[in-house]
Picture 1 (cartoon, rainbow, N blue to C red):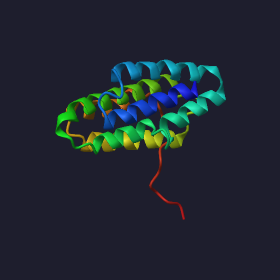
Picture 2: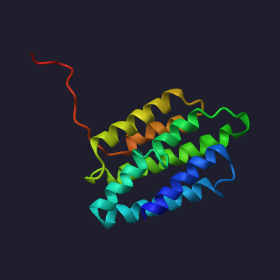
Picture 3: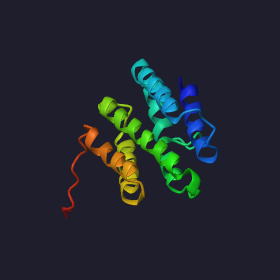
Length: 154
């Protein structure tokens, strides 16, 4: 399971440098959803491996790194298809959060990294579809983060 998910993440990263690295981004994201669903219900350790691969991994690059690297892509000829891929990945993240926000494998650290990346994407991305998808991650995710008070007690 973790091996297949890692392969899919590598394929997504390779897609940024070579458009024919995957046959279809939608198909790759669909396969990832299936593998995620399998891992998240199999066991707690598999769920932890899955969330680490999705949101923390450096090799293969995690989904958040894919979003960041895709934003830096400057080749005019591929901007639209990369924007489409990024929107698909944001949809996957929103779906993941909606389904698994209560799972113990998803830590507050993961949530904060996800929301930070989505906020940066929504602010900086030139494509409205990607911006809208990044903003929808917050609204689709039924996650309640603890409120942080800015008042300091001394």
